[in-house]
Image (cartoon, rainbow, N blue to C red; front, side, top):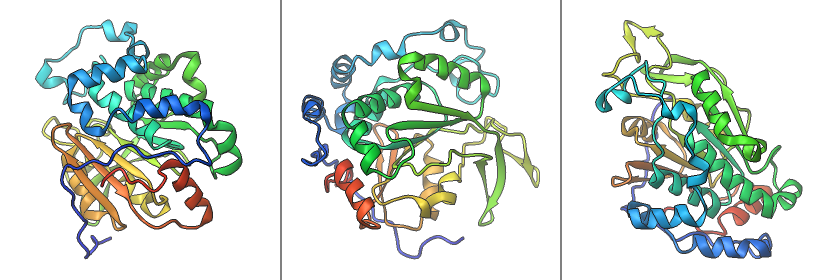
Length: 311
C-alpha cells in the first residue's frame, strides 16, 4: 500500500475546549461532571498544579494504589528500564498522562476504547467508562451500534502484566474492561518492517490508545532484522490494517513512540488531522470526516456535538 498523495494537514499546538454535550443525550446528573471537565483543556495537563487538581477532583490516586508487584525492586537502571526485555516491575503512574486520558474519555464520551498495552492507563480509562455508563448506559444500549458500550478493550503481550492490570481493576471496574493476551508478529508493510498483534478485539473503537507492544514482544526475524534489541524502537502497524473500518470521529493517541507516529502518518489514507504535543510527548490523530450515515451522525452528535478535539 502506498502513502496518500494528498499531504496530511498539520496544525499548531492549538486545542479546542471540551465538547459541549448534546441536549438530547445529556443526562441531567452528568451536568456536574461536565462542568468539572470544562475547567480543563489538554494544555492544563502540562501544569503539575492543574494535574493535582484533576487527580483530586476525580479521586484518581485511589485507583493507582500500589500492589505487591509495585514494591518489588527493579532489575534495571533508570536508563535501561524502558529498553529491557527482563523488567517485571511496572512503571510508576504518570498522572499527567493519566489525567489526560481520563479527561479525553469523559469529554468525548468515548463508547469503546481500544488500548494497545495495559497498565494504570487501563484502570483510568475504565473508571471513565464506569462514570459514562452510569449516566448514559441505558440510552446508549438502545441508540448506539455497539455490542458493549462504555467498555475498554486492552490487548497485552505479557501475561505477567496482564494479571497485574486485572488486579488493579478490582471488582468495581472489571465489568467495564476486557484484557486479552496476544502474541506479536513481524511482517513487511509496503517493503517496511513492522509488528502486529496476532489477535485483536473484534470491536469498532472510537478511541485508540497506542502504547504497545514493546520491541521485546517478539524474537522473530526478517532477513536478520529483529525488534528484540535495546537499540530498536516500536513500529506497530495494527491501526493501518483496520483504518477503513474506523468511523469518523475516531481519535488515536500515541504515547511517545514518535517514530511509530511518523510511520502511521506516512501511511494513513483518510482525513486524519495530526497534532504533535511536544511538551506532553503525545501524538494525536483525529478522523475528521462527514458521518457515514444516520447512526454514525447520532453517535458523533452524542460524543462530540460538532466540536473536534483538534481545532
